[in-house]
Structure formats: structure tokens, C-alpha cells
Image 1: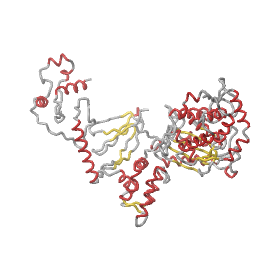
Image 2: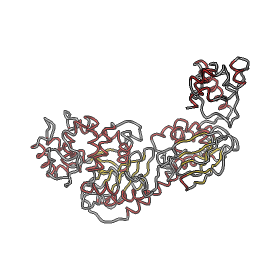
Image 3: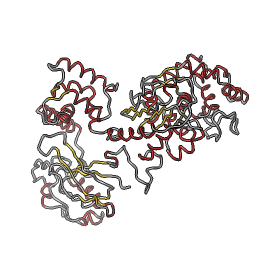
Image 4: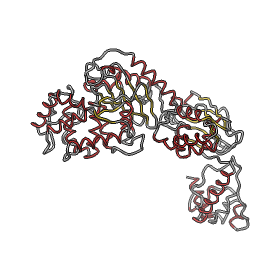
Amino acid sequence: MLQFRLSTALKKLLPTSRERPLTGIVRHKGCFSSSSSRSSCPPHAHLTPALRSLRAGEHRALPRTWPPWRRPLCTKTEGAIEPSEPAKKDETVQETTAEDKRRKAGILPSLEDLLFYTIAEGQERIPAHKFITALKATGLRTGDPRLKECMDMLKVTLKSTSDGVMLDRHLFKKCVQSNIVLLTQAFRKKFVIPDFMSFAAHIDKLYDKAKNMSGGQVRHPPQPFSTFDLFFLHVCFLTLKHTVGDTKVPFCLQSCVKPLKYAIAVHDHGTEYVHRFIGKEPSGLRFNKLFLDEDDKPHNPMVNAGAIVCTSLIKQRASNAEKFDYVVNFLNKMAGNEYVGFSNATFQSERESGDRNFAIGYYLKEKKCFPEGTDMTSILDFYFQLCSIEVTCESASVMAATLANGGFCPITGERVLSPESVRNTLSLMHSCGMYDFSGQFAFHVGLPAKSGVAGGILLVVPNVMGIMCWSPPLDKLGNSVRGIQFCQDLVSLFNFHNYDNLRHFAKKLDPRREGGDQRVSALFHLPPHLAIPACPINALHSIDFMHPFTHSKNSKFKMKCKVASFERCLKLNHLLPNHFHFIWVFPYI
């Protein structure tokens, strides 16, 4: 409260010229404590001689300079006076001009130059393959559509060089400048998974463990028999991709299409309209049972009855051809224009052996579960067509990543689904997506997923990644044997389970933190005269930081700290050079 009174009084006492600095300090706090005490004080009795002379106009304004390491924490406080608009504009122009001069003089290198220096490691030229190797180490692929301009320019530039291999700083800058933001994020480890190579190595080990499993029975004969014993896996992060196995082999979505078409229906019509016809509860029965809930509605859109009704809600007045094109185009957007096809052999097989689904359709028609004017047989044909849509592990993982990314495709950046449809879809995948194994899966894995009789498992880790596993051998409940094993092993190693982040819970690896266990919440720039004896912080690791705006010998430095276990207090053993003082503050959890 004292600070507020001082600042308020000083605003009234001092002239409104920002060129007159405050050079004195207040001596008598009592003069500002109340109105009565203020009136009893003689004029200017509460001011120092320096302030009295300043008030009387006897003090000549001098420019105030700060040492480079002793700058104020704030540029504006409660007692500060706002500069006029022309002054602001003049300062902005001067700062911009000065920055341009420094950049031209080489004091402020561009992002392209910084990236070149990082890769070159002191060399004047770098081979192109070194840049490609460093790029792959970040998790980005040379075929990534977001890097198309960079890769095209790199090919053209290498053809114009004398040796076709080496790049100097200017040629490198020419190649990367069109995608410099994405490249800077990658090399600064600002993606969702900072240490991509370490995480990919863990994924490979989990894949090898699941691949060695045997057992299960193939229940979807239209696939070539040579692929029955294969296990493919593709992980699509919100910014990166990782492939294990031949993920270009196409297979049918089958029941994995159910959450996708439900998301389309909710996106088009809204939650309220869709759930007039379909429930939200797990059925507790087999997915193809002729059974409805107490309101004569299918239990949820993940069982056959609910999926058939959900199919009838898509483009109700259009023909089947128009509906199919609409859904395929929608899935193409979700997949970032990766492969989405159609298996006519599977469609014919499903239609010929679909007696159970026809029985469900007639039962739904009897109970008036369809929207008015629905042609049931036409809807069943459309239902079989959607089950016969082909994808690869790569394209399906991008669809899962679109759900993980809140409806935005991570490849194109386009919004495909509304937040409402994504939230509802993930909720139903979590509670109903794994047939009669849904409760067990939610208990052990704790993530939204959907399985299909073709052997696929569509797994979503919200805000992190989407995964598609494909291995045709199924267990007795209709889920991929190897896929289930991989999902369980994944959550046993990483803290992806919904409730792994509770207090006092067993610690697992968190790939979202750099080094596996760091969580940085803020960066504060502190002047060296401020003493911080202890901070309530969880952990602080060695930091290797390169200041981007100088080339001095101290531009790269390390701050090493030891974490005291007593009451989670941090004590700094070593201070940085005077012109750089940083402290990383972690959440006190």
C-alpha cells in the first residue's frame, strides 16, 4: 500500500515531462499516509533537497543512462508517465533504424545466418548432406510438404554450384529463407516432442517387442495372404512423423471409419441433432447385436447399429455417389492429402456377406430410428462403401493427428473439424471404441482409440500425436493382438495415460519435456544486483544458451545449478557473466 501512495503522490508533485528523471528518494513516509498528515506538512517538507530544486525548476534535466547490465525490470510502472504518441513513433523509427544498421553491420545476424552457424560449426561452407542429416535428426522429412520450397530451391542451388555439394552462407540463406520459421522451430527443439531421436528410438523398441508376438486369427480374407503376418506402424506428431515398417501398404478402414463419419455428422449438423438418433452409452454387448437402448436408439455410433444410423445423417438429400465423394474429400483433408482410396473387392464381399447388417437395418427401420424419408437399402450400400475405404498407416495416422490437434490438419494447417465434433468423437472413442475391450483399454491405456476387423487401431494422444497400427491377426474380441500390446507398452513407458500426471503418482518418461523431465514455464531477465537466495522450484538442469544478438566470447555460456532437495528450494552455485542473467522458473507442483 505504501508503494501505491508514493507513486500517486509523486505523480501529483512532479511535472509531466518525461525528460526530468527522478533523482531523489522520499524520506518521510508519514506525509503520504493520510489526508490530515498531508495537510499538516509544510510545502515540500517531504522532499529531499534534490527534489525541492527539481520542483522549483532549478535542476537541469540530464539524460539518464544505464550500464548495459543494469537496466530496469519494467519499462512502465504505476508512477511512470506515458510518452506522447509522436514521441513513441520517433522512438520506434529510431530503434528500427538502429536495428537495421546493426543487422547490416553484422551485429544482429538473421535467423538464416544463425541456422547456418549452428550447422557449420565454425566452417565457412557446409556440405548439403550435412544439412539434410541435421534436418532428419529434428524429425522433419525432406518430403514434408511444408518444406517443398526449401527442398526445391536446394536442388536448383546445388546444380548451379561448381562442385554440386557445398553451400556457403549466402547460398544456404537463399535455400532456407522461404521456410525459415519451421526450420528454426525444428533446430531449437520447439516442437511437441523436443528430443525426437530419443523418442523415435523408444518407439522402435516397442515396435520390435510387439512384432515378436504370435497368436490371433485373421478375420478379413479380402487382403492378400502374404500380408497377414506383418505389423506396420506410423506415428504422426502435430509437427513431425515417424515410420516403422512399410507404411505405404493400403488396407481398409472397416470399423475405424466409424469415429470419422461421426465427426463429419457432428461437424455438419451439431451434437444435438445427431444425438436425437444415436445414444452416447457403451452397450456392454457385441458390436453387431440387434439391440437398442430404452429409448429405442442405438447405444452409440461405434457399434454397427449406431454407425448405420450415423451414415444416414450425412448429406441426406444427395445420391450415394455424391455422399461418397463428399466423405472421401473430407477424409483427404483430414489426411493432409495423403493416400485415401477404395477397395471394390472389399465392398462386394461386405455386401454379399452382410446379412447381419441387413437384419440390423430392418430392425432400425421398424423402430423408426432413421431420419424421415431414408432409403434403408441405399444407406446400407453407402455404409459398406465407407467400410471399404482404403488408407495407409501414414495417411490414417495424419487423420488421428488431426483429431489430436483439435480439428486442424498438422500437415496443411487447415481447420477440418469443429472443436465440438473433435471433443465428442474423442469422448466416444475413449468409452466405446474398442468393442467389448473398451473398459479394459480405458483402464490400462487411458487414451481414445478405435479398432477395426482389418487389424487397424487408430490411437489419439491429444495435443501430441496420432498413431495408426496395422496387424491383421485379431484376438477373440476383434482387436489387433500386436496393436493392443504396442498401446499398452507405450503407456507403460510414457505418461500418456489420462491420469498419469496426478500428484504423487509413479513417474514415467514425458517426451514433451526436453530431456524427458523438464518443464519450463517462464524466462525472466533479471539485473545482477537483485539477489535471489532461494526459489520454490521442482528441478533445474544445466542450460546451454546461445544469445542470438552478439558474437562476443561470452555469447555462448552455461549455467549450472544444483537442486536442493530440502523443501524444493533452488540455490544457484554460479552466476552468469554480468551482461546476461537468466533464471528458468518451473511450476511448483
